[in-house]
Length: 145
Image 1 (spheres, rainbow, N blue to C red):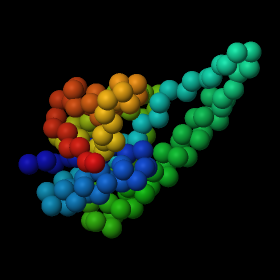
Image 2 (image 1 turned 45 degrees about the vertical axis):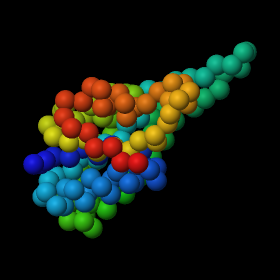
Image 3 (image 1 turned 120 degrees about the horizontal axis):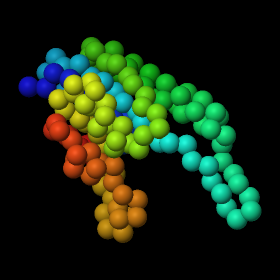
Image 4 (image 1 turned 60 degrees about the vertical axis):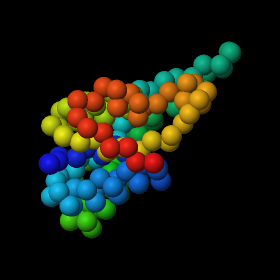
């Protein structure tokens, strides 16, 4: 069945449900797991006459530290479950693009991710990275809520 599962995580509680499901499935199938976290491109903010935001070097450092923390948690959970897991941090991509690229580059045959289940105007305004992955994935996608 599945031999290489990609699980997307941002470290949130909801993403934790997807991680748990991916690890459980990997254990049952004797599959390996790649955990991916994606950092969006840095954007400066400008409002009126004042500009604010993190300098790009500070943003990069903060993103690296946060990603390392998130991925270490997944790898620790995988080790406890007896599942082989590697972690990757994809920088300067939007989440759906990074997830799809990681799945392709890693030769993954299943993507596991969480969905907030936004509906209506909220979904229209905020968009849905999950829908983008579902729409463009070349492999099956398991959505956890």
